[in-house]
Amino acid sequence: MGVRIDGANSNVKGKAAMLGLSPAAVVFASDANYTVLQAEYECPVMVVTSGVALTATRNLVLPLRAGIIAFVYNNTTGGQSVQVIGSSGTGYAVPTGKKAIVYCDGTNWMKWIVEA
Image 1 (cartoon, rainbow, N blue to C red):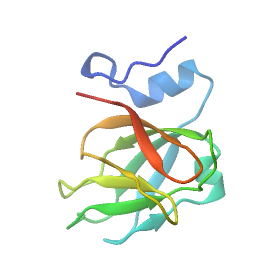
Image 2 (cartoon, one colour; image 1 turned 90 degrees about the vertical axis):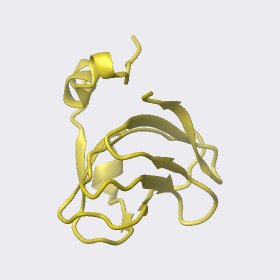
Image 3 (cartoon, rainbow, N blue to C red; image 1 turned 180 degrees about the vertical axis):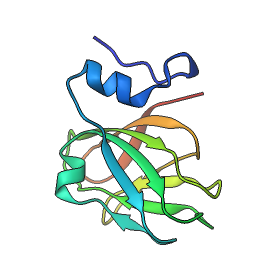
Image 4 (cartoon, rainbow, N blue to C red; image 1 turned 30 degrees about the vertical axis):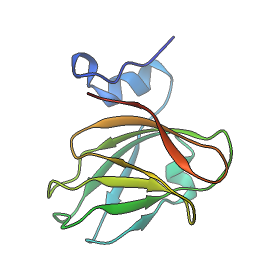
């Protein structure tokens, strides 16, 4: 079974439910980078929102472990990207309003599939 993340199937919660997952609600409480808590990254489906309008691209810091895959929906306000990145290495910036599947090779976070 696959998960489509295109506009025709944009219901992230519905897709997560199909996989038996409850999406993690990840919130940028301030206009600053955010390190994801273990309870938030235990579920690979993350709906990212913000309590304030972001004024620049902000980092969503995830663990650096080879083979981790994350489904990220950037539903923040302010029109900014959210860069999925580790504590070091490079990352991938998910544009506002878009969904992406990203994966970690142990050093960097990279895009796998991005909503058009």
